[in-house]
Image 1 (cartoon, rainbow over the protein chains, first blue to last red):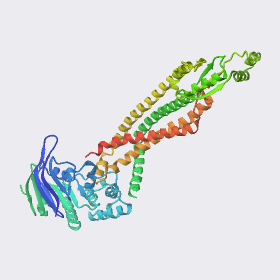
Image 2 (image 1 turned 60 degrees about the vertical axis):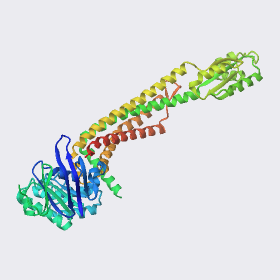
Image 3 (image 1 turned 180 degrees about the horizontal axis):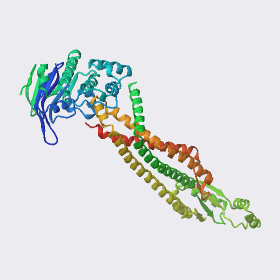
Image 4 (image 1 turned 90 degrees about the vertical axis):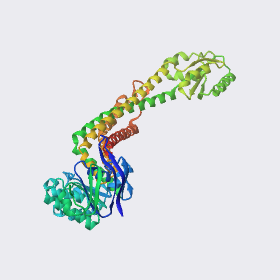
Length: 229
Length: 299
């Protein structure tokens, strides 16, 4: 079954730049997909449209059966609850501890305290940071911070995990650490993972489904693809 | 259950924010304080004006003097005709003998002079005291009464009454206008103050949006914060109002300048006005902060 379906999607920003041209593709439930391409290829815009940070200029985007392109501002939160998002710059709150950062999602959704605690600890265990729950983000390494961000994204058990260059700020070792965590989540929880990246090595080593964008156009979409120029 | 939990969290966050950004909060609070002080004074003035114009209207009577040679039959006739007028509320008849007695009781000098008057040569006139329904139409009613047969003179304190009522109405309108203008200015100031506190929490708001917090969840702490600011801002005005008005009332013994202008007794009047002031303060805070936060809730 398709979790995500795009039909003739185009995106033109207000300043006249066209980021996506007539994109049509679908992504299966439970898959692990790399979205690759150089700067300005439109991969970030693609991810942003999936979580409705940006609206497409034309076309339809279905995420789990909902047409995200037509979603009203007031209803966006309902979509966001069903997916997790990880960014290149982590976006953790510096004044909260690791535990509080992850619990922040649950609190924002109004979960009960004991339920919050259970889920937060499980998420932190999954990313291997259970021993650092009382630390603050600036006491952690970049890779650890990103793992906290991943824990925050998955704590609510979303069906879809979107990652916008999660390894962009990390060295190769830490990047592989993050990739293992993401792969683990994909395999054990069945979460669909979509990850935008321009890191060739990661893509070639993971041997996953690959979507290649160039100048806003879909060039290649293949299972177990690699990244070549 | 979930709603209560969210509300509790909102209130906790709001209190935290008020005290964490205390200098900013203080700016809003003092702004609300000053506004509410003036609002309270305006409310006091306009309620009192309303009260004593009404009191005065109640006391206002048309005195109808009849001709000296009017027979009892004719008096009854006049009474019938008065009753038929639209604006007439009640009529009391007083013959010249009872007027004489009343005046004799009121003053020793009158008593001296009037004691020589017999029933036949009493120069006073029989009178009707007429109360009207609508004070605004009192002059028209007086004119109509004047046209009735056997009526010699009609008096209702023209001029003075009209001017007084008009002056009070103007005072009332001005105080209403001032209250509205001040409330608007305060809302504007609060919008700006809360915008600053929100700006420092922009990152937090954007993350809340990303993880799927509804607009309601994000907005509520800020609205509660505005409410708290309004509540804190209304403390001084309420105290000033309660003690100030009681002191004023006691100092003037309930009357301003003359017996004519009667003040409203402090209890329960001040409690009602305090309630109004607090509600205005909280509403102003809430409106200000909810419009300030709206900007950050668009994607």
